[in-house]
Image 1 (cartoon, rainbow, N blue to C red):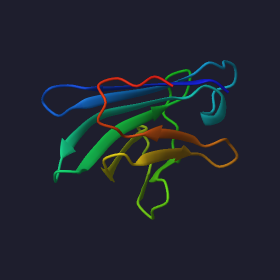
Image 2 (cartoon, rainbow, N blue to C red; image 1 turned 45 degrees about the horizontal axis):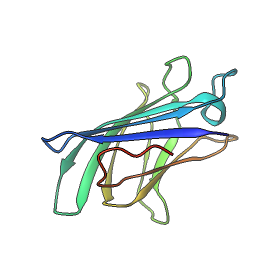
Image 3 (cartoon, helix red, strand yellow; image 1 turned 180 degrees about the horizontal axis):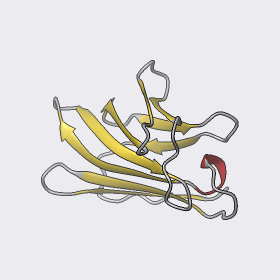
Length: 116
């Protein structure tokens, strides 16, 4: 599966990450989900609060999916609107997962733009 990630930091400490999949078809996390991380608020020098929304390829929330920091016990469950909030460190990797589907990972970096 080919994934594209876009990370853009705005000058006020806000950023947006968009995760797009090159696959189309059934609406599920594994095939064609879009994950949008709406903003961060800097808590400490290296720690951030990431607030986002997880949507499928039709724009519907992926209710019950989870977001976690790779290798940590920190995590959040997607609410009925597809929203979540999680605290991360710079350079952490967020993992979006949903039972029965392939996990997707997103790096939290300090770069202005990153496309993979």
